[in-house]
Structures are given as C-alpha cells and as structure tokens.
Length: 309
Image (tube, rainbow, N blue to C red; front, side, top):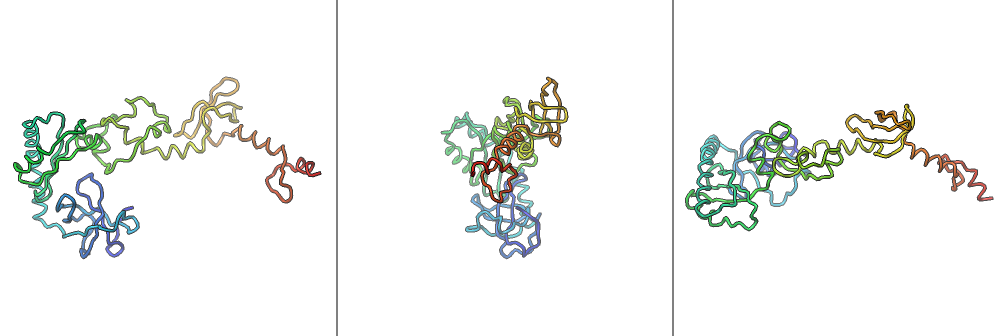
C-alpha cells in the first residue's frame, strides 16, 4: 500500500524509473526534504539512475528491508537536462544496434527499445526472440566498443513487447499496458469462464498473444455476485411459479428461468427461493431431532422421543 504522508511517518519511498514502470522501494536516509514528485539519484543493479519519488511507503508494506539502498541525493537541473540529452540519442543507439545485429547475422531477434541511464553510462536494449538459445554476447561486446557505454541486451516477454509498441486494443481504446498498467497480474482461463466470456481465442486473447489483462478487472466482482445467485440447472420458486435456472445474468443480479409451463422469465435475486435447499431442510425437519434436551435446531422432537422410549 502506498500513501502520501509527511516525512517522519515513514522512512521509505517508492521510486519509479519509467512512466509506467514498477515501483521500487528505497530508504530516505538523511534526505528529509524529499517529497512525492521529486527526482532523485539512486544506485541500482544497472548503475546510477534517476527516478521520481511517487509516494511514501508504510513500513509494513516494504517487501524487503535488509539490503535496501538509500537515496544518494536529490537530482539537480543539470541531471534533468542530461537525461533529456541522452533520451534524444536512444533512437540512434537502437538503429546502430539493429545494423550491428545484421552484420553479425542475427536474424531471429527483434530489437525494440534502447534506454540510456540519465548520465549515459549505461544502455539497456530490449529485444524479443522465439529462439531461446540465441547468443547476443558478440553483439553486446560490439556495442560496448561502438557506443562507449556499458550495454545490456536483455530479452522481454510478449506483454512487454505490446507495452513498448503501444497501439490500440481489440476494444478500440489504447492498450492498457501502454497507458496505466505498471505491473502484469496473472491471468487464467478460469477468469473468462467465471464471467461467461466466450473461450474463443479471438475473444480472450490480446494483441500480445496472451490472455487479455482486462479479464482481471471484474473477476472478483463476478465471483462475489455468483455466490448469491443460483447455478444453472438449479430448481427455484419464483412469483411466476416453479422452474429451472437456464442462465445467470451476473451484472443484472438476475437469472433466466424456464418455468414449468415452458415459458421463460427473467427473475431478480430478491424474488428467488431455492427449491432444492428448502426441500432438503423440510425433509430434515420432518425426520426429527436426535439431540433432545434443549436443542434449538427447530426440528420436530417427536421421532427422537419415540426412539428413546
């Protein structure tokens, strides 16, 4: 949980290095004047990076406190200008990477994005390939010499590719991963089934070739709503007569009933009585209670008394 608070309430902050990147936790240390929105310089596995403070983090929400690094300093105007200068060189670096890959005969990889650190000391190039045994070390060594930066050539998954490429989804709106998603949640076919969505690949597959991220958005609401509605095939009693559930309409909080006369009728949840459960309770009550004494289950005690006699 991330919350904005004044310094003193927490000594931890969440920092983001990209517009839609993950949130990483750091210690404030002696930088008591840092506020959400400020840019800071921190040490990472990829060298020194410039990131933006998003929010203060409650101590209980910090994933791993041991080994957590501290903010080095607040970014100055020169750092911000340098970042813009190196960002302007990223396209040229990507073109150079593709040219060198072609020289080395690397044909089964698609190089997508080049990203410099704020001071140009580190360059990360993202690529995708179906060849799991692809060797990019020769390319990485060549780029180290040509671009005079420490280069990392790293593979990314299909969802990251869609995030980098951008564009529009099947719904006609910009892709979620390119507009507001900062992390990818696990998605399963179970989520589509719970929402009554067709399992056709065209209906549930995104542009990345994986299950659509939006299947997660309403899944919990569907699961909770279905708990209070009868399943298909269940017998129910309604103001229109007895019948069987043909379809569950979760968003309308109703079910479609096939009445005993053959007519179909939509019935809302507050109008339903589950026949199977009621008949089971009536049968149990008619059998009597075997506990005796001060039992308050409501069942008839006649049969239990006869058994004791």
